[in-house]
Image (tube, rainbow, N blue to C red; front, side):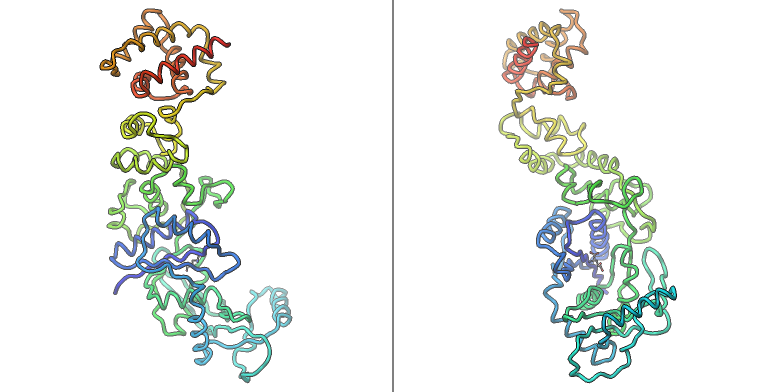
Length: 469
Ligand code: GLU
């Protein structure tokens, strides 16, 4: 049997990190089993579904490399099919028209609540034979079995069982003729030949209803796996305000998709103590035996650690290519300075994100005329004037073919020795002069990479600043 899984987002917002993990597990399961993976957009809620969300979800899937073999299918384009099955079910008696008024249902509900019973439809219209020409609005309800249980084996949670008496006669078609969510999912899973449904735990309660409908229409029941929720680092529900939950935000913050996927896969799945997984290893090793039943917590430190690992271990030209987005966004003109791959080689060990590389090394490519004023006032003091001047003069006379790190290092060391000045104080001042900040690579590397002209101009700029104090 060919394994077929699907990812079925409702496009009511961007791709949430939790849904991205669902998509990944579903994708991995199909790839591991050499099956098919389907993308289905569940856009039946026309008020909440937006085109922007659809494109953001698709962009995120593409960024992560979660390619699909079929789709995207759109539920909004399948209404005729849903109506066709509803008619078949009405004929077969597995569904029925319900003419109960809102008033009747409200009264029923209140009585049940007062008796502390769970509100549910009482089956008033279930066995009624109505003539076909009643001119009153109606819904179509599924004729749910009245007795017995519905059970399924969840790949993560084991056996889950519901009593049919807990389940309502679900409305499958509204008075305006539109099919309802749970019904569309069932027909899609059936038509698309889905063998494994992998989704969030919030759908566990839908599963017995969906299984009953599948049975009623004679469809094969897929195997289910319901993934636990992802919480923030304090164990609280993720919220838009406090957490980065939009997948694209991670890309914009400078994470590599390799690191993000590795991080996602470990949010709830393990393989011994292994932390680093290439995509092909994930595909080879993924299964549900070690997917956790408990909630997972976000851990940004771990994501940063993985990102740093991939920044340093993926080929240089790939990192250079991925960095382009960030250099563009930061409006850095990389033609105006050192060779980018040389720079990446120098800085990647210290960097946790691509954005960090782009921002903190901007000074290699761009002049800055305003220092961080707090930092400048603190470190560019009058006592630093003559050492800075001396270094500038010595740099000016290094022959072009002698412009190497070692000679530059000697210039700094000689100045410290000659003037009997503190290396620490000079070091920070020189950093502020050359980069505008006090944390950076080692000075000799900065000067060598920035080049003579820029280094001298920046030292002059710092001298002017000191003179104005
Ligand atoms: N559309 C549902 C959601 O976005 C998923 C439904 C399913 O996977 O069955 O949560």
